[in-house]
Image (cartoon, rainbow, N blue to C red; front, top):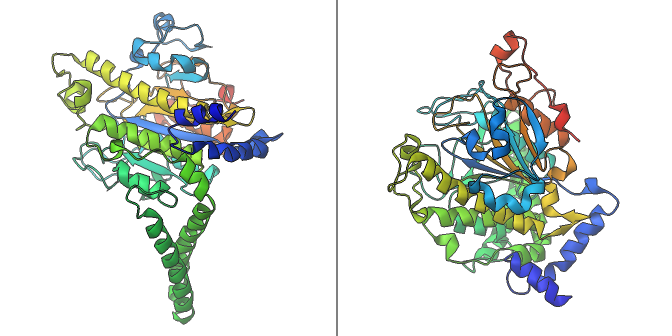
Length: 461
């Protein structure tokens, strides 16, 4: 039994002594015993740049159907060779196509539009979110110490920024409030796991100092609050509330120390590498470990941007150049995109493998997870938003009827056509947010009497 546990935890990259995680897994099982709803749903949004060509993720059996609506099993379908890494997870794989997003900004990026369903600022302007994006809304439904983790390689679509805190312009926690992303895997490691284990050996000491500081700050704010004019009291209340939230999080992390320590991935050179592909792998390792440790239930990862060069994959041109059909190192655009997609699918498959290895309730963590692979520029490099393809891996907590299915809606403007607003409304409704419609409606479809503007009821369990 002990050897079995050791092999199981080694496969998760939990490090020496990982068998101590067994009590955690037993606790999760007890929590869900007779009550599947007690388990949180988990979400990972993996955002790529420069579009996802619909035909590149379409099984050959469905290529001849044109734009007709399809809802068919994937089990016996032939996945494109670039998606072969997901073959072991075919029963929990979903490919969703045909959803339009013409209410969003087209071009190199839709900025917040892909997750917010609104027209964001143009590429050369600083985008500002109109409201919380769908990933942030889902994070609110399943609170955790780190309610929503953002990880990125680069900042906004054409930025050369590399490392540190970034604002890619794709995810927001509220109107005008962009989600901060961490671009340095080593720093993210400290931020997420530093309360229990530290790469620099100083993390625990710093964590305790921060906890003491929060305690002192809250006491001081309460004292000042009594002496300030009533007109300033609301500001001080908000200030106090922010510090109290941080204090609560620190207290939760103290109670989770053993759990965090056992789930933290081993700190290796991967976390300090400047190789783009390795940094992507490090971010995905952090995402999986954070979900397993219970530090968060929602992670958004910006995989790449226009300036990313996949040198370790043998490419010499950046994503933007490849998008303009310049090719790279003797390979044409299609071949370059295939190479990148194979790499991305391997990242998703590795994360799925780690989650599937963790028992939970009557199944495993992957059963209660949605890993969503999407592009910020819809269906091609200069996205026209006529179609927004999604690749999803995970059981979706049994709340959606999509695992193991290939689903395609009629093309834009045809009867039965649907939008990404309908899609995010569906995902939110299925997970407990009864919003009537999320985002802006497509006014052209509405004018022509083709707007659905509501949840896709056929996809909800």
